[in-house]
Image (cartoon, rainbow, N blue to C red; front, top):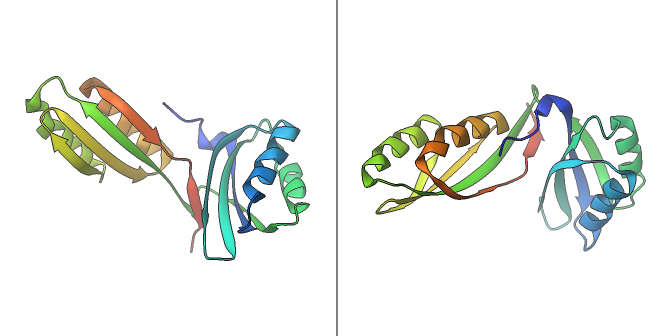
Length: 164
């Protein structure tokens, strides 16, 4: 469950034209070059553009080479490297717990509150939780949830924007 240390990665925000096939061309470029993508998230910013946030293993991919290859793609408008210190970077996790005791609900609620997360639903000894935070905080959160019985989880890739 624990993600690769972000200090060993490059985070790129790539603004692309919002057209069919662009994401496939970007992902294909990484695959052809043997660059390991740690996470990838994409969504439209408006009707014309989408932003792709790519976290790449620094050891498998020299940053200059990645940028040069991305810049060759016609649909790429802008490429920015985002430093951890100067950007807002978040991931999200959804967790479904199956507690072995209904009495543990209050403990989990306190834990979720301590991480500024949300309890989406509670039914008997089942809970659905949500948290959006930095990847290392999500790792800590999930580690503390382990004893309560994680039945299922879904974690997004990183999204990020430059800081102000």
